[in-house]
Amino acid sequence: MSGAPARRTRTLVAVVLGVALTLFAGGLWISSDDSVPYRGGPVTITTGVPEGVYAKYGELLRPRLADDLGTDVSLINSAGSPDNLDKVLRGEATLGIATADAVASLPPEQRDQLRAVARLYDDFVQLVVPADSGIKDLTDLRPAGPGAPRLRVGIGPARSGVQLLARRILDTVGMTPEADLDAKVDGIGDAAAKLRSGALDAFFWSGGLPTQAVSDMLQERPDGTKFAIRFVPLGGVAKALQSELNKAGEPQVYREAVIPGDAYQGVDGVATVAVPNLMVTRSDADTELIRRATGTVLGSREAIGAVVHAAQLVDPGTAIFTFPPLRLHEGARLWYRSAKP
Image (tube, rainbow, N blue to C red; front, top):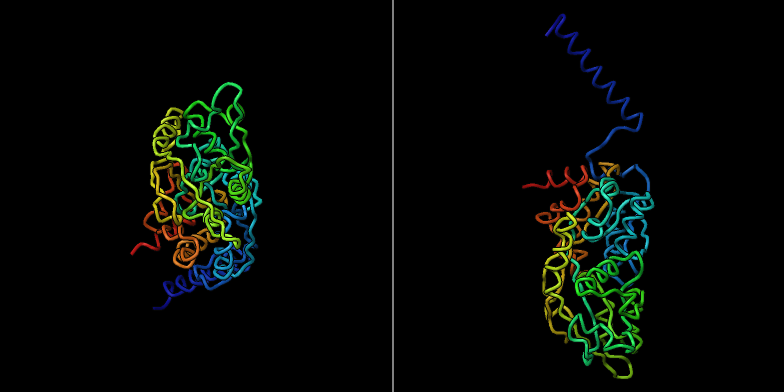
C-alpha cells in the first residue's frame, strides 16, 4: 500500500486512537474487563429487617459484590419493600429488594424511574398461630361478637411489604386492621418472640422459605420447653387478591402456592399466596455497574443458596422475567444477552 490510500489509512488510525485516548483520559472509557475495579464509587444495598430473609441475602451478597466490583459495598436495613423502593428512588441506595406487588403499587411516574436487575425468589405469606389456637381460617381473626376483645395480630411495620399484603388479604374478607384487630407493627423477630410468649395471637409474615425467625420459634429452649405453630390456609385468597389488581389495571403478581411440609420442622404444609421478589435499581444507574452486579447476583446463587435456601431458585432462566411490573435495566439486559449459551 502506498500513496493516498496509505495516508488515508494512517490518518484514520490516528483519529481512532486519538478518540480512544481522549475518552480514556476523560474517564468515559467503559471497559468490558470485569477484573478492572469499578470506578464509579461505592455501592449501597437496601435490604430489610435484621431477622428477615432480605437482610441475610444482603449480608451474603455484599462481600461478593465488593470483590467483583473492587469497590466498597454497604448495606442499609429497612422496614421492607416499600421502604426499599423509597430509598432507591431518592438515591439513598444503589440496589434494593422489593416484592413485585410493592413495585406495581407505585404511581406510574415513580415506576418509570426504576428498572429491574433480576427476579430473585418468591415470598410466601405465612399467617402464623400457636398450634392449639382456635384460629382456623382468615375470618376467625374477627372479634367473636359485639363487645368481644379484638385479637392481637402482627401485621408488620409501616412501609413494609408484609403490612401492604396483610392489609390486602384482610380486605378480601371485608376486614381492616383498625376496625377488626388489635394490630401490632412489630418486625418478624419481635413478632415471633411475642407469639411464643403469648403476647400475640397471630402474625402475618411474607418471606422466603424458611425464614430464620420462624424456624427459631420451634427450637427447644434450654429448659426443655418447645413451642408448636400452625399456618392458617390462605390459598383461596390469591385469586381474590389478583382480581382486585386486575380491576385496577395492575399486572399479575400473585399466585397460589404451597408452603411445603419440610419448610419448617414439625409444621404441616399449607396453601398460601406467593409473590416474586425483584432486585431493583434506578433507571439512570450506571450501565456497567448494573451489568456487573447482575453477573454477581446470578453467579452467587449456589453460595448464597447454601445459607438462604430461597436463593437456590435464582436462575438466569427465570431471573430475566421481571416485566410486568418492571422493565430490565440496560446493564442487566446486556448481561443476560452475553450469558446466553
